[in-house]
Amino acid sequence: IGLGGKALVRFNTKDFSQREFSVENGKLASNGIAALCNDHRDVLWLGNRKGLFRFDPDRDSFTAMPHTDGHNTSQDHPGVRALHEDREGRLWAYTRTGLEVLEKDRRSWRQVLPGAFDAMLGRTASVTVMASDDHSLWLGSNQGLFRMELDTSALELFTNDQGAIDSLSNT
View 1: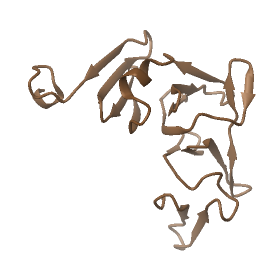
View 2 (view 1 turned 90 degrees about the vertical axis):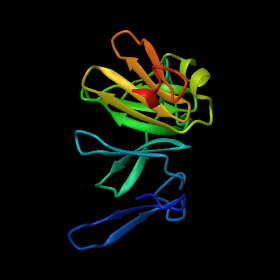
View 3 (view 1 turned 180 degrees about the horizontal axis):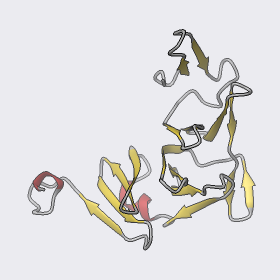
């Protein structure tokens, strides 16, 4: 559970104990939690303004995932705002630089439609990411709902304009 930018707390449902992860105790790089995702391998991923982190249960800590841009790897990851794992095991992240995907090998990053989402969503948008069974990726924001075909990268925007016949509020 994220505690309003103060820490992340893990509750043990068997004995009701709790464990806090924060900058103060050296367990997090930033206390702000923007996204959490538990993948199909039962690995917990955390996204925040400092990047993407993988929980290591053996060390009871989070490890930074290096960001790969082409052939360069750095710890300077564009902050993660939203996370979702699709059924093929890829981890989708909406970051300060747009939509990116961490391939299922968990080693290589790929930027998807560079700049396309920034123009539509803006840099300050709150975004939710979700994959669907029809091989689409959905991005919800205060600008509307976007559907991206994963095979073709075609984008479709659904808005909430009560005057438009195809608006979300009229369907």
